[in-house]
Image 1 (cartoon, helix red, strand yellow):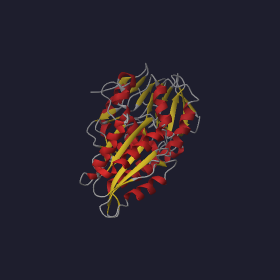
Image 2: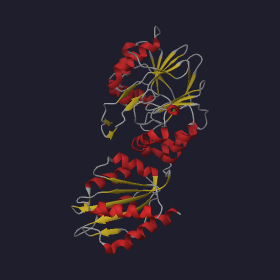
Image 3: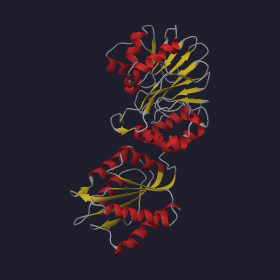
Image 4: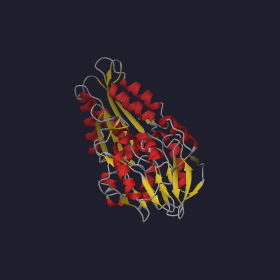
Length: 398
């Protein structure tokens, strides 16, 4: 049976949800599933905005058929050609041979690459418009948010922004389509942050360019390709994007990411966290990088102001899982953080220096000195070193 949601009198959500998916893009765990959003507007002309992943393709076509009823499909607007959104495009064209594909020139090329078909697409450029009757759409290019062909579509009539991957989030929609119908800050924000930082985080400059374009139009609703639709309190979520895309932390806090083979480096991390708490710091999170997926550590590094990395020396280098995390942070362009290091080495501790080299190659990173060196296990005589690191972290927050 069809499963659709009314957004306005003539706008419908016809997407689907996948709660069986383990890894989004075959890399990011999605314990809460993911939604694939597509939208249909029933104007004088009918308009489909994007399609869905093949995992929910059958549901998508049942939804599309129901909403269209006896009507044909006039336009399909492609904002983003990634397969989790475009997988059903070829089938849409086959089922509705009169449909007009609307896309930009880069998208048209990618359509050919994926589907090996020629389409007589209506090619649009920056600020081009398309009138479908009551509604007029304006197209804004958003290259590298997060593919080079991405654009967003703005309905000037109802003031709706179809935002492609921008303002999306991991997580399946559990009946409630709108962000104001759920406890977004407590139950969705972590997934939204993890989605942004790992999918789009590298492209802060490009996101800033899109935010500037979006600020010039009056937006009353945001319809992303993943996650809830926004119709209230848009400024709150847009402010998160402002912080994330300028690499500003959401607030003062410390993330301690550690690797530990036999528990001794973990013990040092626990002692540090405990003493930070004793001094009144409440925003502390800890992650064992051998247990926690790197996407979580990346997300938290974007959230807080201060980072501590604790790693044993392994084969003369950084413990592999820690090195993966640090390289991931660098790949996602993290900036503007204060960082401290703890290294462990039974005979030749070198992980601290190598971690420092990786972090120092990133923009506007402040490294606190001195670092702490553990020889096999932390001993009582190093208590003052721990206190010194605590003081350095807290003083740098003032």
